[in-house]
Length: 104
Image 1 (cartoon, rainbow, N blue to C red):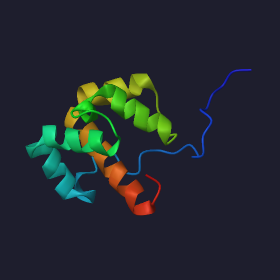
Image 2: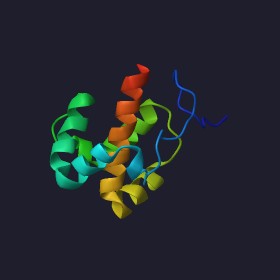
Image 3: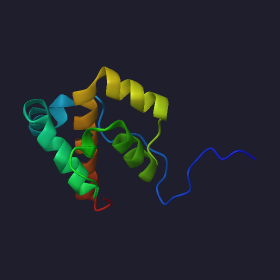
Image 4: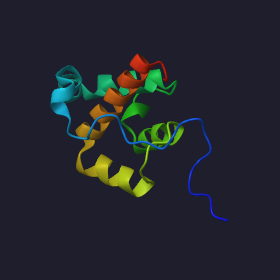
């Protein structure tokens, strides 16, 4: 029998905002565009990782796995490679939404 889902307490879902949902949170997008290293440190800090890990591909994959977000390592790579700033901003928006919901 093949395991297709990671065991966990979260139902499979998508990221709570789209990759290019700039208008859903203009502040986060401006933060990411003008001070990306600072946003990376903020994400890493929130996830109890070392500074600048928030800008790494593995960080997105770890987050996606932890919250059972649909996707794959290949998709993470493509999103991270083709639209780096968008992927980091999407991760930050998702963290903020989960904080508001009390599940982060």
